[in-house]
Structure formats: C-alpha cells, structure tokens
Image 1 (cartoon, rainbow, N blue to C red):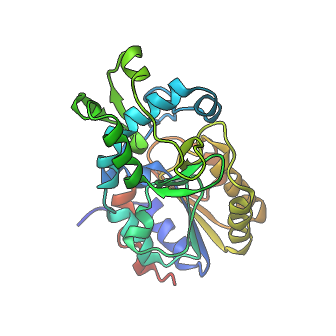
Image 2 (image 1 turned 90 degrees about the vertical axis):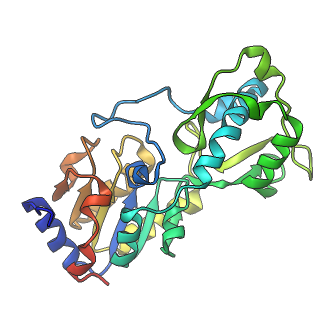
Length: 276
C-alpha cells in the first residue's frame, strides 16, 4: 500500500468538505498518457517555445514548418488515451473542469462539464470564414499534397508537434491545403501563444469560479496568465485551494494544500473522500 503523507490527507479533507469543486488542469495531467509537457519542475522551458500566433498568420514559411511537423506529431497525439489522473477526476464529479490542455482526454475519460480553455487540436478552423474541419481530414489532405513528407525521420513533441529535420528548401516545398469554402488560411482550432482566449470562454470559466466552494489545480505550473487568473479570482473569494503538481508554480502562495507528486499517483482514491 502506498504511503499517504500529511499533504495528501489534507487534500482529501479539502475535497471531502467541498460540494462544488472546480478543477483546473494543465500539461502534467496528460504526461502519463504519453503527451509531453513544455516546462521542467522549475517552470523553465524544456525546449524552444511553441509557435506564436502572429508568426503563424504573417508567414507562409512558418505555417509550412508548423504543418510539416504536425503531420508527423498528430498520429501519436491522437492515439493518446486517458490515464489514472483523468479517470480519478471523473470519480470526483466536480462542478467542472477548466483545462489548459488541447487533447480532449478529460472528455474521453468521461468528464462532461469541461471548458477547453485553449481549444482542441482535433479540429482545424479557417481564419477567414470560420469553417471547421476535423484534424483527420487535414491529415489526409496534407498526405495527398505532400507524399514525400511521410518518409522523413522525426521525434514526437508536445501538443502534436514533432522534431523534424527539414532544410529551408524542403519546408518551402511543402504544399498547404487551403479552406475548401473560401481559400483562407487553415489553423488548428487552438489558442497559440500571443493570441487570446475567446471572451465567451473566459466568462464561462469565471462563472464557474464564482460558483465553486473549493478549487483544485492539477498538473499546471501556472506560468501563463490564462490559467492563473482563475486561481487568483478564487483566492480573492477566499475559497480553499489545493494543488497537485511536480515542482514550483508561479503562485505557490495561493494554495492551502500543495501535493508535490505525479497527478496519476496522487489523485486515484480521492473519490472516497466524499465529493459529489
């Protein structure tokens, strides 16, 4: 039997006393599913920062580089399955889950009340007419237009990306699909760095924060403001707050309980605390 320390006992007590638990999740919730994260336990980048929204929209070269890498990373990303952390959160039956992840693993595990704060990688959106297509359709079009691309060596990276050694000339030879409806630029239906979360999505998340009686953050260093703002609002309301994460966060001082452990280890069994 695994040893349970004092922090985990206090976490269980916090959850047992909650009837409207709100959960915020980050990349650490999905690492046990084989999806890599961007930051180490000190909150520092493990690798180059992800593509910027402005660069993607301004530069065809950046778009070609992105889609060439995504062509290889998507099959591995799409095959990821929920882990024990996702399943444990289903058992907790929270008020809702605000996730910074774009993998839809909470929904695959069975959670229904989920806000995909940063969007979802299984969809592609036209930046001109807002038409939406499935990422699998984009994959088929990329393969049809670039039969040579599938022969390149690569290593899977976070969020459906891949480390791929292509020369500038090879990147320039990538042929990109355009929107079938209007010919516009196609982009993953996710919030890239430098872009903003849609206001309607933020407002819905704030309504959950204002309705909750406790908040649990799972697998997030809170280094980006898009998730941190909800923690600050909950703290301002005085609701009890708990964190399950490896390493430091941007705002450790906000939390009443802090469990430094892998999510898939610390969360299972908490449903016995009496939430729901």
